[in-house]
Image (tube, rainbow, N blue to C red):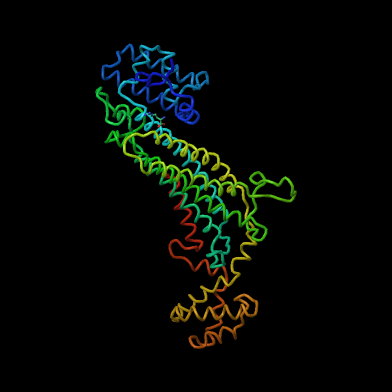
Length: 466
Ligand code: ARG
């Protein structure tokens, strides 16, 4: 006789085609430990409700411990006929506890509330792991920012030289989104902190079980307020999958930056040998594969989220088997992130910047033009005119293929003649240095060294509390 959990009203077992389609042990077996923990808590609830005697409860707990031991040692594993992890574990429990006692555990619960609870337990635990690995990345970035000190680099918009910035400022610009992702995970956990156990198939249970006690044993502070919602909603799984995708996107943008900086043309950064790869044909190659794989895998993380959202859309609200599809999406995201993040933080921690080159490039491309305009504003020139006068300086320099600081005193006197006396005009040169430019941007959040120092300290405090 087949061992399905629902044989009573059926004349035959499932066709091999159905069994193959229906089977999920190949991916849900990783929930076995959480399932057994849930079973222990459920057994105690049955005991408190008088549905297991003290002796039965004791034997049940011993059997569950033995089952856990067999699962851990690999002595017990799913077989071909097991539909899902719950089916397999029931078979395992019956083998240990016997049909009589083992058969009592399923009272008052359904695989619907069970599986909704297990995915929450599993995800909450792994979200903490992911957040910890992400903190290693922010820590590596902050370490690089501290090491960079006052070093400057070309700041870009539209990939064109815009204004000089501190290298530390640019690196920290990647830290904040990642810290927000970590915050997102802890915010999400507050909503996830609700146990569906006791919801039954959809309507609750008749057996006087205490779902709050089960919830507390499983690390939840609350019980789902609505048993249909408890079994059928996956918005919280989807929310996790968004955060996972967002982490991918945030890391992908940093990856793209590192790939560009690492090109021969830029040559801003060098990656450590241990965190780069070579080519099978071109002996000279040293490739930024970690950054490329991160950029590539961000597509996969987005795909997992998109697939899950598409599955959820249009489902009538109570359990439907479609919901089984939630797991592979987030398992894949967690596996991807748990593999990628340690490599990524290693790459970031060990990369080295060519500070001289960054410094030499920082002011080029007329990146100090805004400083000229703002210097004029401080001398009473309306910004509209100041912008034009600075633009005229750029045009002059560009025409001669020189940089702004190569213009002569006579040039500045001529360009500013309608607004400034000739003895003042050449003083504009004082802002035509990179150090002058970055130090002047000293409003909160700006790239002045003193502000960046504060920013780093702020991020370190934030990370310490995460
Ligand atoms: N394996 C299913 C899932 O992962 C749970 C089983 C519920 N099956 C059912 N026929 N009610 O969602």
